[in-house]
Image 1: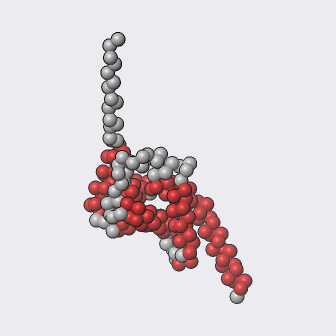
Image 2: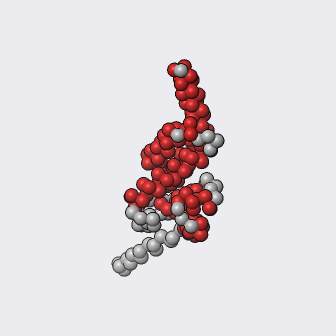
Image 3: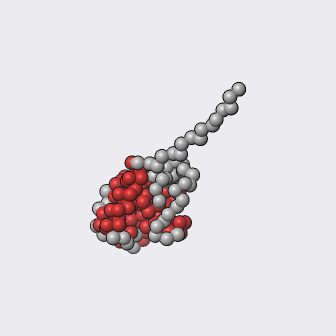
Length: 169
């Protein structure tokens, strides 16, 4: 009995390690985009990914044909959404647009815009699936994605430099 359990545990660990070896890089990149951290300094993204992978490992035996990448991505998105909810308060997940830049590619977007953009554009999740995952109507997901894309493609202009008058000498 113990040998069979040990064998099962070893097989489970090998399967999970193979999954992580193949998927962790892409999932870490997605988490880094979500957190808007620079790729070389992303502790929040790493913590987010670690928690999502831990949850996937805990339910590994219950996947039964379900895609572990999809499951982990869902946990990643839900954990990010919960964290943003608590950090920024509310479904709008608004943050002041004028906050200091963190160096991440998507740092001009609100957390909700980042989440939807990453799911739709980077991960290729269908609009209806993203809407169901986030509990939003598909039309709202479409509108948020369009607004986020427009924000990235057409960033706001920087204020014009102040003109300094020089006194004649």
